[in-house]
Image (cartoon, rainbow, N blue to C red; front, side, top):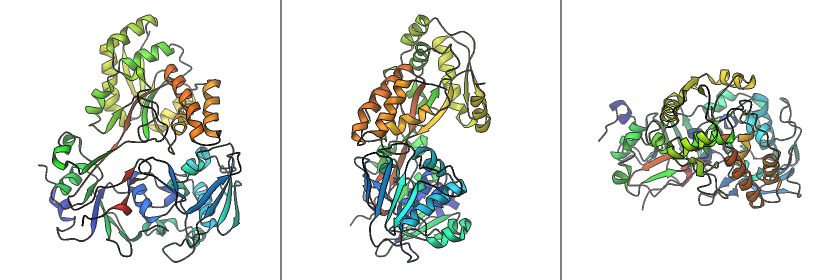
Length: 490
């Protein structure tokens, strides 16, 4: 059994500590509109109540701070009505301006959530750094949001931390650094202490929750094994095979909402659909997810990540099935591939890119060379069309709908243009309901998989294990672990 370092173990709770403890990597920030990692989203889900949350069984949005979110039928103008009586932890009321002014601040400050507001939601005027034209307050409980184009998934998008409210005092002072050290939310838990080693969350008539900064999955896992920690939010690769026997019904694999692809530049004409299909068949995705990725990802069988529900279909990517003989035949039928195949990627992806390169060299007898570049340099090379081979794309579905996973592929820098696919994705976003948008999204997915302009590889997932004293945990791909639902067994 692995034993965590003494310094880590002694920082955790004593066996009789009545508090609930969770191990996680430290959050980059707790300023809601700037939250960018899993720990930040997890804490935000307990400290703030957003307009919507997500049903852990279906993934569908459920009203939270919002009493209603409605559109007159065009899915472009949305009216948000708040529940009465909402208050921040400092006692001040949660009003319509708590949301609209917070969203404006996110855009003005250029925080992580700014892209979600301006490029995903496309709120009218969100590119303006001083005001957002598409936000209009009607009264203390009602505001109107105007988008640049129809989006039936707008209510589902509002569960993202980019859309959380902030109190008037903070919005007026703009003292973001102080606010980040002791955020004031409107959710079930308030932060009583926040530092580099732990964040303490308190709630009346409930047990205190301590989120411990434990970056290494092995330390988290070992601490739960010896009852020094209640929940580990990560499992080390070397314990994946023994996780079931060691924790039995006390572990959870949470499907993800992100996907890793190899995308192809449209200006390189040698990468015909037939060549791209052959390359996909020559890649053993399972060998990589179980090898260099350490069982932390699920091999792709669709363009839509497994955590994106409802509307996702399993097994849509038949060309994602490893078949080296079929790959060789397909490449021969396509006329072969002349010259070196460069795979462009960020340095952090080097290990698995080299594995793919080795597989393609072996299975297709072609020259393959990884081409690592820092993120900014890779983007510049794409903009200037200097990229001459497939490049790595990590896409994310911003809300739970199939079309939310497909839209980013049209904006991945490939230069891919297909009026049929673009029209289908527009139809999926502007349909009268998200359910009515599923069929055009599926048709678009089928065409994208046939063209293989972005080859799906795998979808990262999360692992959790918990102590014997806890009830089973609840988690969703869009919020992570639900801290407010942690409970001791009777």
